[in-house]
Image (tube, rainbow, N blue to C red; front, side, top):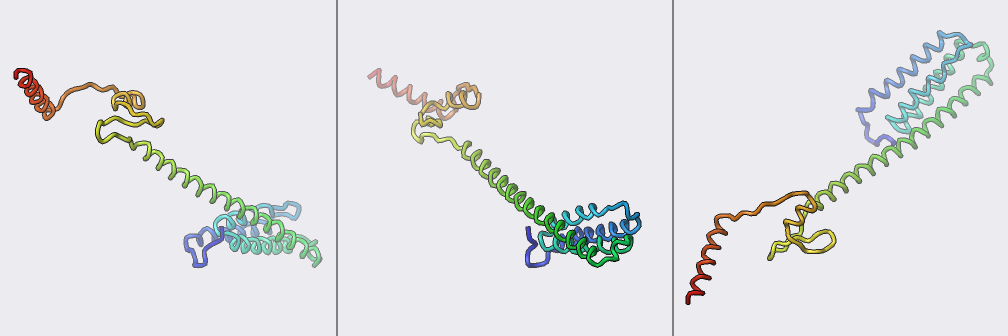
Length: 191
């Protein structure tokens, strides 16, 4: 992931830490004997810079690590007196660290794409859950339509899909209405 064109100040502490680590490795390498090479430690700050800051910062860390390794080699090894060997080592470091930056950049793009896909999938799943909560009910008879398109009583739907058992009662308004209806029915039969 390349950094945006405007400076992103939240990345600077991590990137400065990478350069500090590269400097520390260089100092440590200057203090170790020639037979012991710790140049592989440069991979960590270069990879970290590429992950945090993208290709540009990874390239900057690549040049810094190659230069630091060259300085440390020149300070500790008599072989570095040969100019051809110095150039070969620095070019070799540039190629290897550049390859690492490319790999980290590709991996970061895949990671970002997977993260975006996971977020989109989670959003779609949330929408499906919302749609599952919608229950089509007939406005006239109050029956419910199941996912197969069949209409049935709400009691059987709730029992089948949610394990809910219902008990029946009558609300005061409906009780009054049923008494009036029953009263009207009795009056009609008496006449």
